[in-house]
Image (cartoon, rainbow, N blue to C red):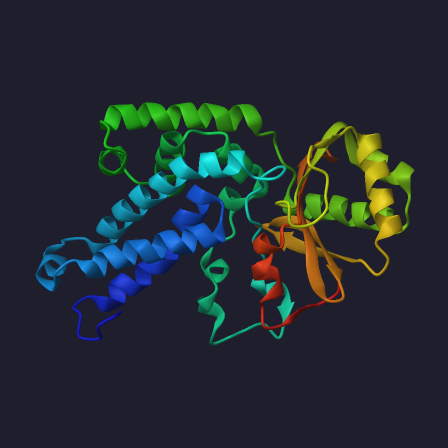
Length: 311
């Protein structure tokens, strides 16, 4: 698709990382993000060369089109997720530095390798984004995360800059209302390690002590693997459920891994990742566990070209 004689080709290609970062935060799905980026480039190359050369800022053009593509996807995603079996959780992201024998030359082939792992991809952040309207999400992510001016966002949303400012403000209130202060990464890693050790020891009392009394565990199997379809609520119920899982899952191996830029856990069976768990922590207690089990959302964890090193 790329023409080596195309003026400014390097600039166009270099935008892929930025577009993938944007699309993942807007859609919460690597597969959908990659499709949106591909559609954006398809529209770019569908233009006559003369029109492409007339574009003053190819990066801004690509971002505008990617934003509109994602907005359309978000509109249809709501209907699809209403038909989804059980809870829908954003697709978890691995940290490639934790893989042994990971790809080098081919690393850029996986869209997961293009995502910058910062606070704006934490599972807690993405879950709040899911509660927003498509327009709120686009306005908030573009302005607050990527620092785009409201005048440019207005072109994507086909609204006035003032209306886009109000959308971002509304989204910001949602984020503040839902987000509790999280401990430093080191503190969360310490808590997740104790959680792993308590689970491996089948110590229900220790598990209860690590969980907030009102904690909730949400699992996403997508109807493809067995899991709870509704949230498990309360420290004791979660601990009991985890002990039951341990009893019926011989050979399951738990490892401490970075999940969306924060400490989490990965469960493997026969060297295949079967569950990725992300955590939300407040005041030294685990308040939320998001357990992704849908195999379609674990492709990046099972196609690294290497193996996870044990902790």
